Length: 137
Image 1 (cartoon, rainbow, N blue to C red):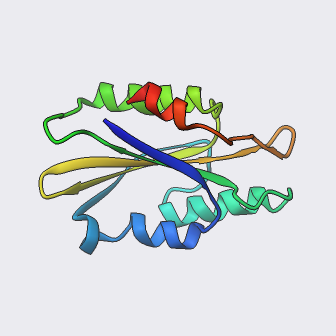
Image 2 (cartoon, rainbow, N blue to C red; image 1 turned 30 degrees about the vertical axis):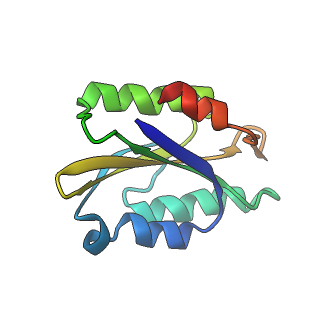
């Protein structure tokens, strides 16, 4: 599996990309947790609203998980990959949503986590995480 990720701030751009059926074929909200939202756009809006109580600019972390060409993951393997990445990034228990894209018969997923610890109203640090991404691949 190939995993890329980084902290971001442009929820409007990502909402448009993640819901684009022309570019991505089949688009499905695979999971959402820790939010009142039930759509991708609402989820970004809610994350931004929470972050407005902080000085954090890059209020969410976006990861892109793509199986290698010969790989086909089961639902359990997808769940493990997302949960393991979440743990390694220090984002356990954070509000998140998962979007699945199927394009030309291949599936990849995007995971978006809120970086704001709502109990402390501070951003969870997420600087050099290249090794964390490699550990899950």
